[in-house]
Amino acid sequence: NAGVTQTPKFRILKIGQSMTLQCAQDMNHNYMYWYRQDPGMGLKLIYYSVGAGITDKGEVPNGYNVSRSTTEDFPLRLELAAPSQTSVYFCASSYSAGGGGDTQYFGPGTRLTVL
Amino acid sequence: AQSVTQLGSHVSVSEGALVLLRCNYSSSVPPYLFWYVQYPNQGLQLLLKYTTGATLVKGINGFEAEFKKSETSFHLTKPSAHMSDAAEYFCAVNTDKLIFGTGTRLQVFP
View 1 (tube, rainbow over the protein chains, first blue to last red):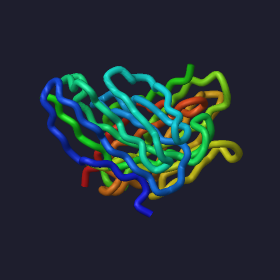
View 2 (cartoon, rainbow over the protein chains, first blue to last red):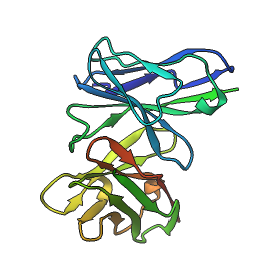
View 3 (cartoon, rainbow over the protein chains, first blue to last red):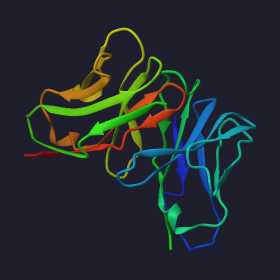
């Protein structure tokens, strides 16, 4: 199994540009998550999904959109990039509910810079 | 609301010395507690977790952590540090969503 994969690994955007960060998992997990990691701040939840067609906001959703049309894929869309969105983005997945002891599996991350 | 506090953003030890990374949590319900490790330019990897049962939890690479309800703590320890342990370590608590601490960067000197 490849686990959780993310593309691209690195990206530089200009202010106002749009892009989609791709995330896929091959573990047949129901739950998928997007986090951003800023220095000294830990990881903050942007959006999550409990299954195909169902998404919900996390702690820091402003400026982002998600969709989940299949169990495997969970893309994150930035519509109008801003410097505040410079960060490292991690996708994760888990088999069962977020309120339990289930392990979340993380992808390798996408490092995004907005200039 | 649940929260996690990691004391010390940087910890330095000599190779062979004890590693102690501190984590305190706040939760209104019995928590599930996790330690994740992040090596440079990589994603997070589960080190160990506490769900129920035995309060001393053993993880990968010789790490262990003890859940102490009375102290609301879940400190991570390793008896003898190795150079390969240099990484960033995140404590996390999960009752509804997974909430991460701000991380502790461990440096290991030869």
